[in-house]
Length: 410
Image (cartoon, rainbow, N blue to C red; front, side, top):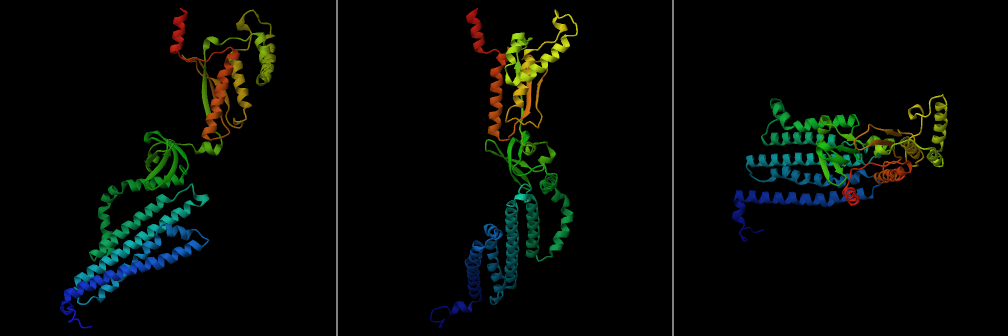
């Protein structure tokens, strides 16, 4: 080609222009290498992964591993192609080659990160290990890879041995401990939480100090995410779960029953002995037949000992509150949704200014929240409605309507 005729001969004789043109050509070649790697390598691997019956290759594709590996192509083109640029200044050539090495180190680090991300997804998909996440450990590995990559990049740019920089880290131990304090604490906490099986993904935990009350949705190295019942997300530092106390409701789910602990306050002024006709009426209650029969024989045996029966203190008699308590117990024992193999109590607590508390302590046969609330509400509804049959009044503080009736009747 006649370069003089087209006016390019002077440029070809100018070494700076030749070097600039060669650098531009090298950049174009690296861009072409990237396009070829992404179009051919990545596309081919995606096609193979889509046809394969295994899933791990799909996770590697989703983690963008092969897209990141494709970036090695332009870095290698620059690293080896810089030698072909004529009369290039040695300083520039060395700098470009070092930048290429730094790019290769960065691509390798990002590729390792993609592999770890895919490993986390694959591990989490295994039913046997879903409740014991390894995300925190993988993040620690990523952190170590990041530090090593940073050391390699700095050592390459300054043309020093990486070991020289690593040896200098000993003098910076105090600074590193300060900078990575939370990471070190979180690592120790993650080991303790996982080793002692204190928390799993899916557990319902309560930690009022941090406003957390809901399901654990993610356990990472530095944080634990809790989705509260109002669908908000609370993020708790991992090491705080070791430093502070929290409640884990997993045991309730494993046991298969959720506790009911409610009290009915009885107006003490309505507590009295039962009359014989009332006892006969209660004998017709299916839930009280065994109790009345047992108590009648027990009381008759006690009262037949020759005491003066004209004095109430000398004889035993059934009380309405005791019979009501027996009714509640029998009602719970025969309730199909109350657990029969777990604690079941109906007891009196210390009298209060609001009356005599009758506490109900039992467990449902389900841990489903909606079903639990329905069972508890239906039970309390029934007991409030049946209390007047025993001549008992439940206590509540006077309301405006009570004062209004008092004024109207006065």
